[in-house]
Image 1 (cartoon, rainbow, N blue to C red):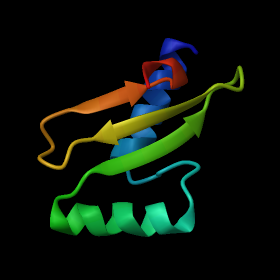
Image 2: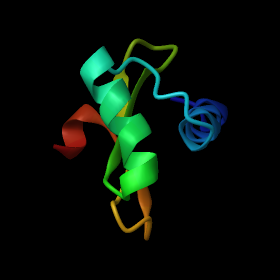
Image 3: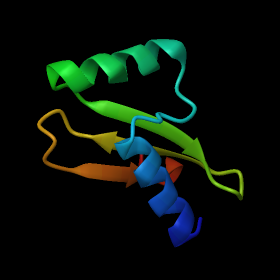
Image 4: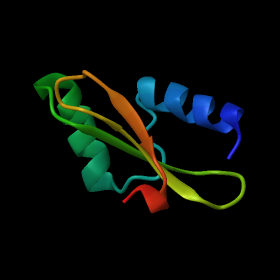
Length: 70
């Protein structure tokens, strides 16, 4: 995954584009903006690798996770 792909995904996440989450997670993310819960986005890189971006409930950090990070 390129640096540009990571930055693009972070921009999408920050703007409320949650990527490939299902409808339930999309609604949970939208609600989390109002209630201060964790936010999760899912994207796929150009090489086909799925990755996640998670913002903690207290908004103290946002992390990018690859499958091997689990």
